[in-house]
Amino acid sequence: MLKGKGVIDSHVFKDEDMSAAGFPNQNLIVGWVLRTVAIPNINPHQIMKTTQALTKQAITRNKEKKAAAPISEAKEVELEIVPESEKKRPAATGWVKEEGMKSSQELEEEKRQAFQERMKYIKEERGAQSSQQEPATLKTARSLPSIPKGTSGDPDPPHRATTGASTFCPSCGKDLDWKFCPYCGKPLPN
Image 1 (cartoon, rainbow, N blue to C red):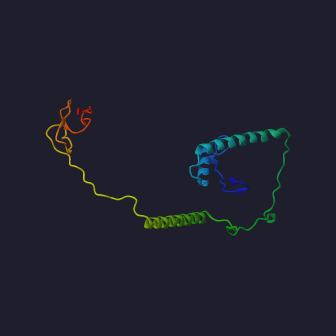
Image 2 (spheres, one colour):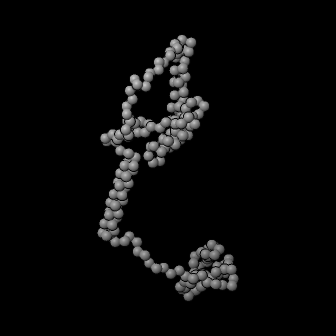
Image 3 (cartoon, rainbow, N blue to C red):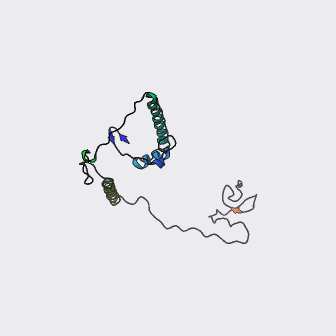
């Protein structure tokens, strides 16, 4: 996987991951891309479409290469066996870390530290704001009226200060001091 001219990551798929066409399973490629590229809200469907286009292009180019040189015109070449004493192989003593390259653990540790610093800054900012301002909401104790227990199914009307004259709902007969009956919704005569 490239970003500009730089290589972000590479992965070699095993033979068991290959499809009949000789290319890796596209679902495995999409999964690898999602794990490698840490972009939030990245669209897996778009990655699948891009993977399909690249695979299709690779298959057509592979077919063109096969058709470029027919087998009948190809020459047979025999390889010479080189003795072991003449082979020059570098002695591998271990892993060499290039300067400027960071391991995935070091990158994760840097991200973790940056996140902790951001959270520390946000907490300090909130603390400074809360000490400067008064609380935005006041908490008060609220007492709710109790539900009366009556023998009939209809609840008692709420207690309101009346002006001396009582108003009855002509539909249901409740004694109310409102413009509309809260039980049946019809207008009350005044």
